[in-house]
Length: 135
Image 1 (cartoon, rainbow, N blue to C red):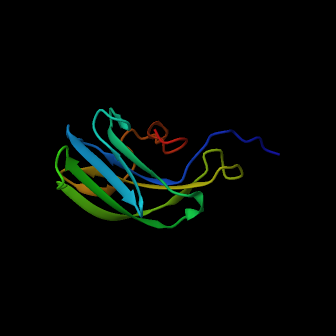
Image 2: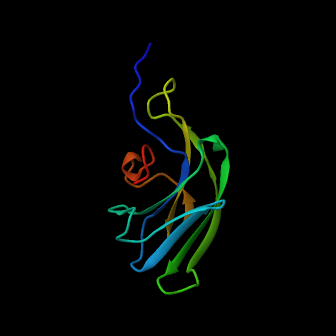
């Protein structure tokens, strides 16, 4: 029998804002579940602002509809309001025969390109909470 490591994972959708603007609140929603952040706040780091929306593990390998907005502080009108579909892929950080299994998918956002399918610019994923607890 193979020993399993104890690396956790959660199912969810993420958006990495690669060129965040100061004073702008970024929000991502998958269905009725939303998360938000801004430069200098939780989820902010050297690679931009990272937003995470937790989904139940029972979601499975499917697609999720995502809405992303960017709204300046003190405003009710977003400067960006985009929608996309994200494919959730099964991840098993401890290997294929070990728990947990989670389903994750993500997008990147930049002002010049909008929402796009992507991987985090830091390359690893773990630093952004893609494996383990959301950062």
